[in-house]
Length: 144
Image (cartoon, rainbow, N blue to C red; front, side, top):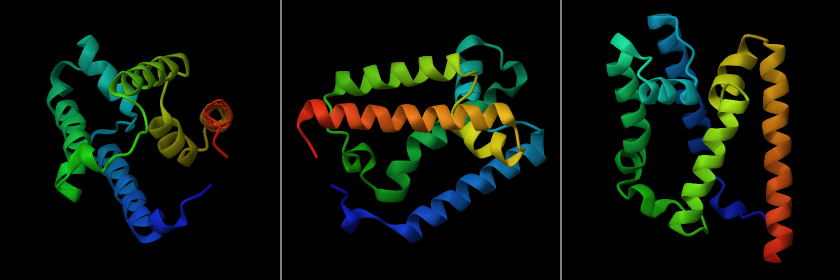
């Protein structure tokens, strides 16, 4: 069942605008696509070189944002999973982004705005996989 009481259209709209603004600033300032998996992957593999500093700040900003905005950080998140489940989900998500050669931010926000057919196929695949996963988890857990 959908919890309409927790739906926040204004906050969601503002958040979407902030993501769009960040993408535009990064592209205009450095001619880079704001694909989070690529940014994070280049930090891990050492490919970032001189651009390592802004990448670290970008990732730090994503990690610190919940605490800055809500004051509660991860306490405000409700995953419904134990910590090991969140780790496994994160690993599978990261693995999937490597297979897709990009993530939802790179393909969904940046790729679609550039009218990339490859990004359209990737986003349709992400969305389909997400819907199937939610459906299967709800069936297994006995939820509606």
